[in-house]
Image 1 (cartoon, rainbow, N blue to C red):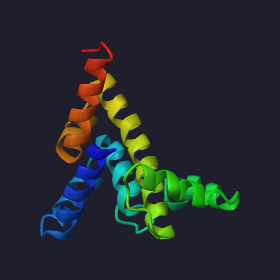
Image 2: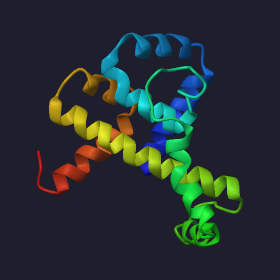
Image 3: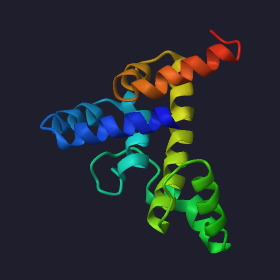
Image 4: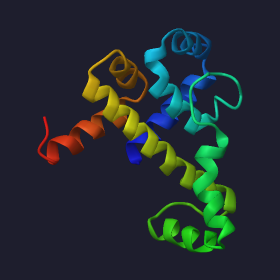
Length: 146
């Protein structure tokens, strides 16, 4: 989660820069970047904003928190996040944290796919999710992988 949040911060800075337009053009032009686009959708809601075509959309990334809230468990989730050391004082912060976990889960799936297939998608993962990729490799190595 920490690695994904580092990538999120770097991508946020990139999104505020003059380079963002060329990044979007590059991603749109290459279907191999779909996994990274999915992560960007989780982070920024890029699909819903019609910035990038790939991603699951707002409903997908917010579903878990919406379910938790529906069942009246959001105060418990808030307490859990606070016990973990996160700033979850408001409903918005709690919702954002839940979305970050969903985004991290999707990023993990897309990184796993790119690493397994060793295709062009891997170059986009390394370029736009470098911290997540390094953590992925570290975890796999600890688990006895390559």
